[in-house]
Amino acid sequence: MTGIVWLEFFATLSLQLFLVVAFTRLLGPDFRSSWRHNRSWMACLLVMLCIVILGLFLPKPFWFHPWTHLRDETRLTIAEVESKIGNGLLVVWVTGMGLVAIRWSVGAYQIRSILCRARRVELDRAAFSEPLQRVLDSDSSVVPFIYESEHVNVPFCYQLQTPVIVIPKSLLEDRGEELDDIIMHECVHLQSAHPMQLFLQRLLELACWYHPSIATVSRQLSLSREFICDDCVAESGRPTAKYLSTLVKIANTRPPRVELSLGFAPRANDLLIRVSRLAMREQDDGHRNTHSAHATRWKRALWCIAIVVIALIDVPLNVLRSPYASTSPWPKPTVQLLDAFNIRVPDFEPYHHSTQISELRDDL
Image (cartoon, rainbow, N blue to C red; front, side):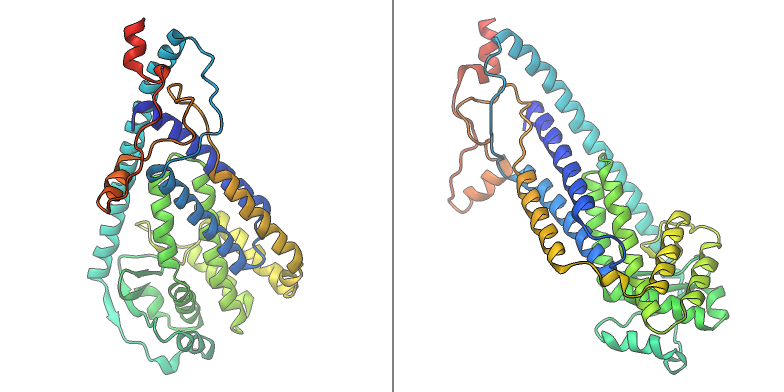
């Protein structure tokens, strides 16, 4: 793609991502229902990833051509400026992705180093509380290995192939109900496929690192994952006050030395949200189910309609767009892939004199 096409791609993508997040916040469920909240923002994340992929590998529709009335000299000047801006944005985008990838690679290496130095421990399962045993028995396919480490301050779970829970050595030495809370919390993370959610979240953060709406999606997803774990512990019969004291105790420890994958210790602001939510849940346990199912279905339908409209948005910045074209050309990687299966698709726009920058220069 040329610099002008990249500029149009970034402008269209940025507007689409902003609108997807805005409609998800407007029509999505609140945090009283942890599972609905999580599913809503995961749907938002998947839609955003699809929009990025479709924008890169499929043609997009052209709804109107606002540049046709311009003189050739004006069109050429605008095209040269847009080309420089688009190429500059491409360099910044690729550089930013590289820096983000390096940062996460360093974090992944640090976590692997912690796991290599950690010691596996065999805890007596019979000594676990009954609620914890029920959680472990609910999904026999996810039975995590438990490790202790002197190199972490807070518990966290990790899964590449084998599910793992890493617990600070100090917490293992003080064996008690707090340890059961921690293990249960991390087990729910693993059983709910939260490591895969986090992986997809990281992919979106990598591809769209520059967009401010990505921070909103990441925070909402992180909170929703913690809400699910909090609800599971609260519904297990464990007194909410005791669980909250465990949260506060872990939060008062020193911050993690590395950016953990799914850590138990909450951030200060997130802790306040989780504490207030658990207190609200304790006061009115049935309030979170009072939402009308009919209203929820209407919100979902409106959200789906909005997503379809957003996916078809076109920001017509390409001054060299052919007035005869109804869609953009197929991207070259897609053309080459389809060509391998003997599928022919156009990778060019219909000819028009005003779209050829070389001819415009020759005329002037």
